[in-house]
Image (cartoon, rainbow over all chains, first blue to last red; front, side, top):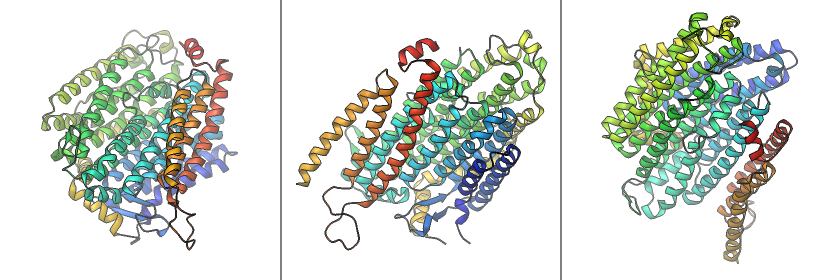
Length: 520
Length: 113
């Protein structure tokens, strides 16, 4: 049996996106291609997931160049988890997009950009090579530049310019870090680098600390963590609702994934007797406080800022900063407490899944509201619940999942984050998480009270009925949130298998699969 | 000889990064673009120095110690990506100018607020 399947999701998305360029003169064919392509993508991802389930690692050596000399694509439960999340969000969002965007916009670029975003994210989830990760980041980013600037209006151009400049500086920093790491370790292959770090003496490994933290800053920028968060609100507010859903649901998770993969799999392999300045113990121990500062600040800044935003999508954008903080918080605890590595990574993944379902749902609800009423100003809206009970119900599911109410997916996300913090005796982390949860309740209920409850305002009274197809998409998202919450055992099983790669044994298995294998 | 060249390169890199950072922090959007360009080129030069600059061309059988060809391949990739993104950025700056009638970030943001 070959491992060629690993490359299938990337290829399907790539072929679809290029096909979408060539069939653009026939919008109907283009839409059909795009939807068939995304369904094929999901099928490829789940076929791959079935191969790595419950805890297998597949390595595909591109061009038959053996690792560490060639580029290796690796599918393990960690990649599988992120891919599965993408494969659920992408088709639903695309179906929504087809109904949401005006035909000329779809024809020119939307479908191509959408699938290129998938290509980039998928490649980033699969690659086992640090420089290749940079290239996939760029692919994701270039597609997302197009999506942010999609409407090309006065807000869109400014937001996109800001986003591009920030990410170009980020890319330069990433290249610096990658080049430096290559200079120090002599390899770009992640498995090989982990092996080198495990064998290196503390003196040899010292430069890696600074370079790896530089890399972490870049990943933080992609994930939109404080203090790199300023691009988030303007970019999400400027992008079309389904594009914002993809950026928040998938593109941000690429940054989170990179923190887990490069931090917990590669850098955590360094010799535990490492000492540098005041830092003793693990080289990776330096990550604990740094990640905690990023996560804690994100939770507080995102939560506080979301409290008084004037519009629906700005509230969601700031909320997204806070929620990524919640994803990274268990990682911070796990970095500091080696015994919690598996639990911490699993908690982060479950929370990421919750956020990847709930946030697109809320953005898409915002899109429906904007389309039906012509506005998302919370001051102007009111009484939507009476006008469209389905929409209100769906919003409530997404909002309660962000808050963490059982039996929704968010309950387990919050539970695992709190559990990791408690097990790690991280009182401050626990306090920040509780405060963040309170802030989440506050801004979610504010949005609910302003938009859905209260007097029915003029714009709501005169609004058109929501499009049934788009309504069906958000209902499907709500269904997924409930399904993950009710049937949580297999999801957690996969998350825990994914977290295993952050332990010594899991890392060894990963290294063996990449360097020992070759093309089976 | 190689040592001297490396010192010169290190100094040049320092100057480039300083200039790039300075330009990125300007209010004028075109200068920001120049800053981004200088930063990315500085990064490319830095990558080249990572591979060593003392050896001969990395062709099999050329004899002698070769420089590392991998970093050169990396730089080639980075140059291509940088070219595309810079072109896109210039278009965006032009569009921003069309939409806002200014490339001064203070003016634009003041008007947006």
